Length: 253
Image (cartoon, rainbow, N blue to C red; front, side):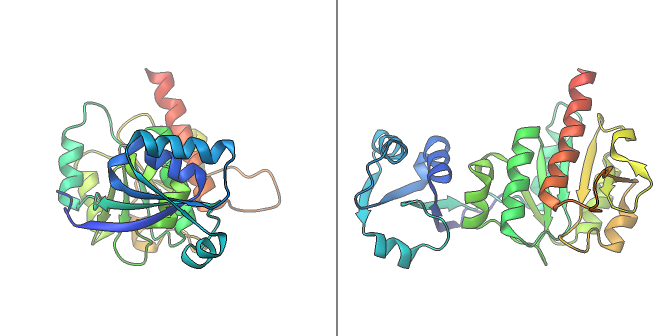
């Protein structure tokens, strides 16, 4: 099961902090607000913190700029997250308990935290049962990922596995079909059946799927491109693929 080790992180930005206070107020120990900010959106964050009896402290703009990188919008939360990343064993225990065909997302070496956060957000919206990432050569769950995910980091099952190829083989043994996205694939995403037990496998930024990962896939599909560019950003491509799977599942219901 997941480790109980706590990890204190800084979450910044109005949207990210609001989602955190709404979904997991117990993880927040303190809310920090830039002095002089009294606009509607900031006050909504204040109200969420006050309702959860969370301490609120004001900081000068200079202190905010010193302590927080990125676009903080004058608000930050100090939170202690229980390490909720699933092990490979916990992943398969989760799959055994499902009462519907699994929809999984595999990210083969995504290194940009903004991309991982966006993929988690799309995974939450599309009803993905779990997102799987390799432990090595892949970004993990951090403050930037949580900010971009806007709460999805707390709602989506994220599993980190030591050997991705071995994990993919075990998924196939469980009757889950592996559908990899590859620019050079001759089959179109829209021709592929995605309403059964499926794991969508997406490659890393730039290089795409690794050779061994590609060889593990049962099917390779491409997203039809009508413009001059030959590929999409991995997080955008993930959203397109997940929602095609979601569309097919809705039609089957």
